Length: 607
Image (cartoon, rainbow, N blue to C red; front, side, top):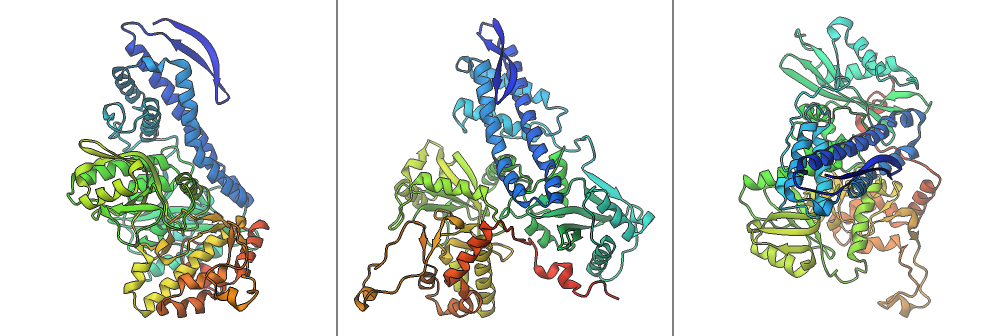
């Protein structure tokens, strides 16, 4: 192979370029070069990713909450930026049009060899897939060229430091051990009263253990992940207590208090509370990880029912989460025989939604033609889904995985669903002999639509769920999100009983909306007319109209008006806008207020 050596810049970085012309017998050399270039690209990406995550500690200590939000948004774009950079580099160094499939297969084999001692092999495999599918402009039926299954084991990878630290309370005592493990995170900002906080955490732990520390086994230890988990205005210490055959998970949220010091806000000990903390209805954590698989393996021990795909995503590694979701789905399809059917609930005007009853997710496809009153375009709807990735979801918005060219077995689609898709979204569907390929879709965790949930809820549960619904709207509002269409059917109830918003085609930034009162009618005839007597701009919102659409049922009217009447008043919405524009960042607790030490011990340390 003849090569011309020169230098070029990609993404501001200078690389030696090898512009290749291909001759017989050069395939191995080209494949090796491609493999090295791809791994260099991934390593560069992960350095950026890890640096951004490591800086979360500084932002937390400085109380730079706006910087923390900006960093989450910027980090979410890192992957696509590095993929674009890698494609540019490959095109500049290789004649990609001259490469055959055998060369790409060889490149994959050489790439596997480079990953033998790598600390993030699973992420590097996903990076390879992302690049190759873009080079070949196909994301399916090229399984021999990509990592459909993991090639490198992630078990027991050793990093520059252990994934977790171990402490032995039998030597120092429980209180001193807790002080030490907190101190080892190296926060410079001091705690206001660490002795008090540790004592409160200790007493809560002992209450959880029914009043006394269990008989100590020889291996009694407290294991804590090396990096704190940073999100919003909090840092979280994640660990577990191991005592013989018994294990107890725990999480210690660390906040800033009103005096500017650090404080342990509570200790989370229930698995359900910890699972909600790691819910994808919130922004992703910032965690400094040398070996991400070690963190995921640790988290699986304290949340064994949570899929690895969701844990990787919660750690900010959304592409790896997507890879694992796809593998899990294909595995489930191989071990089940039920059919995809239209999802329960009111059929949407913008999206057609279907599900596999035996699998806890729904798939949403944008329709070709929208229902009456919908003026947006498919591209505008896609932009709304991109917006959801940029905003703080504050535990009240579903996370959606975006797919292009998702290939599913054609025979697993119920005939009526197949007919619906071909009628409602034909431009998004391609039928092969064995596969149905969805050009673009969004996958979300399945929830019970709120309107269906209320149909069977008793009086007490209706009250609770109406409060949840109103609280969801309030929390989204102060986070600068206006749902747009607030109908009950656009919200869902999770398996933990929380209300989330999941219909994104009309969301707006709250500060872009113009909240108005309806002006008085100029005469009685105007008020009785079906037409408005006042001009309405596209982003004008009239909160007093909400009652017409939301409170038609007596079942929900009384609790809503008692708990959330102010949501029907323009003053509430304008006050939220004022607070957002003033730079206020509100605390959103991913656990019950009743769990907080300031509420469980309002008078301080018990006697």
